[in-house]
Image 1 (cartoon, rainbow, N blue to C red):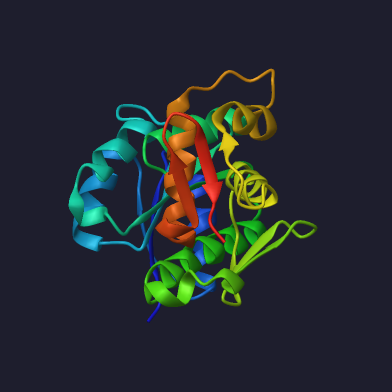
Image 2 (image 1 turned 45 degrees about the vertical axis):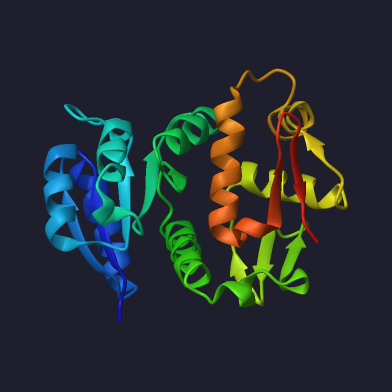
Length: 225
């Protein structure tokens, strides 16, 4: 069965381009021109994925995302921001509001389809039997290609999530402090709060399994072999 995708964007040209591209790939697509109509459409359409523009008049993308996440109907719905903003800001603000990923403008059709297929594969992984997706040998990180494999299934992570997972695995079971995570993943010149780390850890756990990353209270996190 084809996945259902909802596009919420106030720019008609963007909506038409994305709709055409995705329908050509066999997806079932609906569109909305603003946050309010997008939420109403989502309730009737029940999409697997929502592509949501950040900058919109009225209810902007961040607020729309927060409102959708408050509705349990969309607990399993992926939300991907469409943004022209800087990467770091979009990731931090977007993930804090409940987004799963982001795509930058201008939209390139081949990149768009690749990213969407990667996002939707997470649903397959998330629904796999718990014991199958959390075996020690089931997680492979290809640093050259920037890809993670879980039991042979490719998982494309956003840059910060990938760097965080690779850092934890490199520690070889030792604790990675929050200070180290901030320094290695975000850098010394970027100011982010502890909540940012928590959000990224939560996203990783959703994708690779809760028992792969252990919280060491007051210190940080460690990767469980």
